[in-house]
Length: 346
Image (cartoon, rainbow, N blue to C red):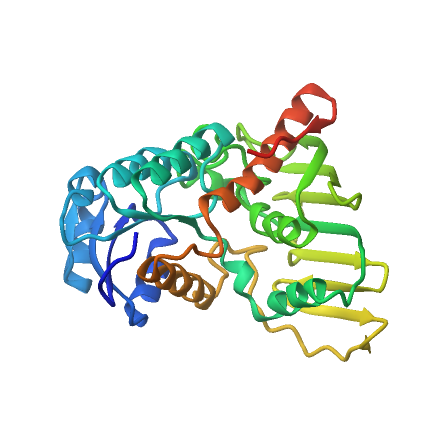
């Protein structure tokens, strides 16, 4: 669907911790305008209306039906993305969800099918793909500087106290969060791993809940086999005191790159040799859930809005975002069965 306009009008569903980051990003971009928000909280609706001069709604269905809204951004808890997405698609509105796309492959599939049937864009926020150093890593792999990929490792050894999980009734639940550390905190680094390493063929996972009173897991490991023949590992936890920056390691026959908290901390290959690395000043969510820089959200949103305006596809489509959920669902199924799970591509 190509829109004959230069600025998209955006409505946001939900007002959680991440919503102000979207608002700030939208208000700094030239190709969009913040026009509406829905929230069940009277106080939050009043605050947003006063500070930003936008219409607010208690029911997202009422907001979605507004003719002045072109795009819906969904900032509800993870397990509540499907219903507003389908409602928006039925109203011919484009949809952007916060990560994850949804909490199961089946729910993701319903969202994708609804948007495809309506001819509208569905995209998902994976803002860490837009870190400048990650883009350097991605280009190095594409250009063959690391040679054939052998091994990829994702480490998310973070800390969250019980108060974090108690702060909202959906946190750490299978219905609202989809699980816990793997699908919530781990998903960004897992997405980067998959984007670099390619399609996963199988996974063997282990999960535990050892230090928190939650339904989901606070400790997980997984072994991955990629279709290329390369292998991968995931280690994720919200129980590691006093937390470490998330780390992504990519190893090929001709070189290796290691990233911590969005910054390259090691780079060595046969072409470039070992490069001198600058001090890492990037922020991490290792201890603070909001220890992130909004600029990556802004960059990705700009990409999505430009794609909608031009009738093209954004870098992270609904289909692309579902791949990470497929792997994560495989981790959970494997942990439950005690057996390796082979993944199916839709």
